[in-house]
Length: 311
Image (cartoon, rainbow, N blue to C red; front, side, top):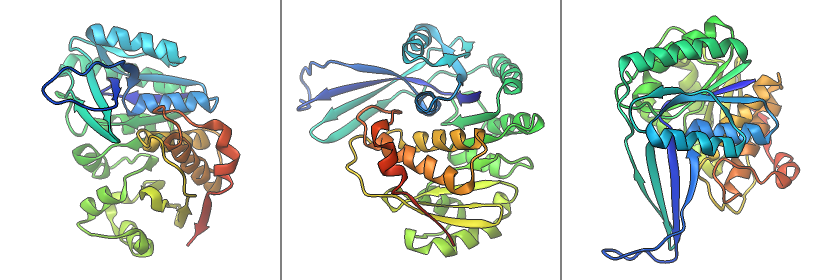
């Protein structure tokens, strides 16, 4: 079983309209989804045939509604209840644009956070892989993910982390490291104080290997959008080239990539298979109008077009 963690989930609500009229009424037909990066991971893992359990924090009427949305998606879940109301995030899709209104979410109390840690400690004993995705809600310290990484390490369960900013900084500075991190090129340049481009993969890989913050992380994968990605694992450096596609909705592609990596790690796949699987999932998500969903009928075509080269 794979456990997915979403600490700041949201009910994602999209409003597709032909033309956004400012300072007037816009009538819409909404589409509502159990959202948050970890829930996108859950949907893709379910589609890949994995046994998945989603966890995190949920509260209020919106939290109850979100549980019903997960039930409708066939996602097993065990979230810790909190007093605050789970947030709602709105995307207005208009004239080829996407205008977003993102609530910050509830403030989490210390006792609620400790209740989640206790639950996580129990759940991690039942799984063979964990993914931790997204931002932390108000009231949760920036180094909170360090605790989850340490608990997973105590149980010798691989943990894949997909976050940024101070939460990522805290994990990189901790003694116990996650199994995999997946920052994008912009985030890596910010961490290193550099301005590397996709054409400078070799130099960037050397810089990451020389940085003590990345020592002890089994997999470091740097995503570079249409330029593909590169990764290093146990002293090996890989460049991944992906095929050009007609992107329909790229939202959730990074989460889908994490799902592919978790699927492969849980199965004990080879380096090449892991990288091809993750990158294929990211591409297939972008080819589907639904977020956190693969255009699975194109799997063989895309998977066979992903090239992995050891540098």
